[in-house]
Every structure is written in structure tokens, then in C-alpha cells.
Length: 119
Image (tube, rainbow, N blue to C red; front, side, top):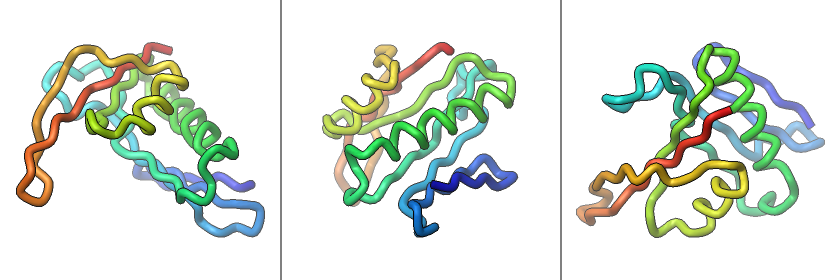
């Protein structure tokens, strides 16, 4: 397994054959109340690799780099209806901090929940 990073807060996860199977993007929080927080902007893993530890590895590596940026609290946003992903975040130690917002995707209003973890 190889994990490489770029200078813009992006990690790329590869499998044993160096095929890209996932990525994450992160940096300072974009929220109005996030001046002292890091944010996991996005994390993605091909579904063929779910449940194999790759997602946990990508999450832990992303968190370490956010900590290296000087943040001890990390936030992320997740769609309320995305139960599987919410469970993944909860197993990783994140909790819904009761902050919500609505976004529009394809003309449909969807609720997003903010999750937070202090390291």
C-alpha cells in the first residue's frame, strides 16, 4: 500500500498494485466559526475496497496531516441521508455537533450535518 500526498492537502490512496482506489481533501475549516479548526473536505474510496481497512487508513493519514497543520479539532460535513458514511465517521470518533445546513443538488434540497472530532 502506498499513500502519497500533494502540496494542496490531498492524499491519494493506492492498492498493492499502485492503482488509485481513493482520495481525501482537507485543510482549514471553511465554516464561519472554524478559525481554529481543520476540515476534512471530502474522502472517497471505491466501493470494491469498502470494509478492508483502506478507508480507516486514509482517514487516519488525513487526520495526521490536519494535526500537522496545527489543528486539534477536525470537522466534516455529511448528507443526513448517507447513513453508511455517517456510521463510518462515528466509528472514527466523530460526533454530530448539532450544526446543520441545506444544500441543493440537482434541484433537490438536502440536509447536511456537521461532525466534529477533537484529537
